[in-house]
Image (cartoon, helix red, strand yellow):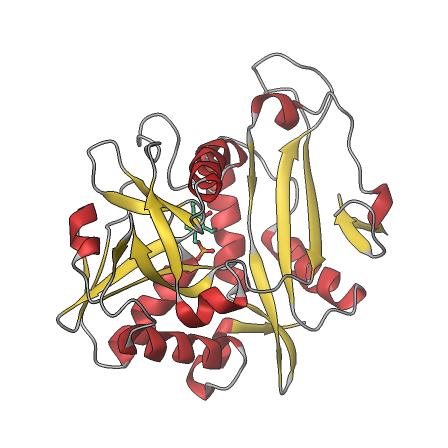
Length: 304
Ligand code: PMP
């Protein structure tokens, strides 16, 4: 990803893609304290629009707040900068990655005297769990690694350091031939995927784990709202792994993963082992919204 044409917003300026580098003594590189976001822009009939830009940007500031990190740019600047990156790279559909990280003035645990930098990159990125996964569903394995304890890593923050846990889980699952991992919390209840929130459907009711140790996903929030608009009941509660085994349907949500059906967990087929009708309905509502085909939700789109 480093060797390509394009422009990256870096500390207030658009710089050539290959020049958007940082020193090897960068504090975040050593100690993993940084915060980031992941957004998608979609091509719509009215032009390209970033989905829920404001909510993602607010979460970036909340993540920084949790860690006591001061982002040296105001909200309006970063909202505009994210749109500018998509425009400047002439992207119609893409993924957008803002990151705030500590600079290279000094190493040592304390970041008090270290400057905070912000970079925003954008590039085309297809279906995260595969186009076939979106249609047919993916195979998931419960991870031997637990999701973070709420008093070890701050689960409400989308923080750089949290993702070594995600990588351990994803690596384990994919090395064993599965598409993605499902992480349980420290009490053994279902938390989330390595980069997705999870939902199950049973007897027409939709369930999703409460947000104790899962990220407050913006796609999760979107899907909950869309489900309720469709007259479906959504319940947030603790879920066990065997509830997933016996669910009629299950799916992951995330900016990268969008709405991806889960057809199998731990080699147990879920429901009919295909994308179920509720998942299909929510997936199609979701794609209508992000692609600008839903008048009602145009407010979630920020045209670049
Ligand atoms: N959980 C984790 C661990 C994630 O990395 C993500 C992706 N940001 C999500 C859930 C889904 O969040 P969102 O829908 O806001 O992308």
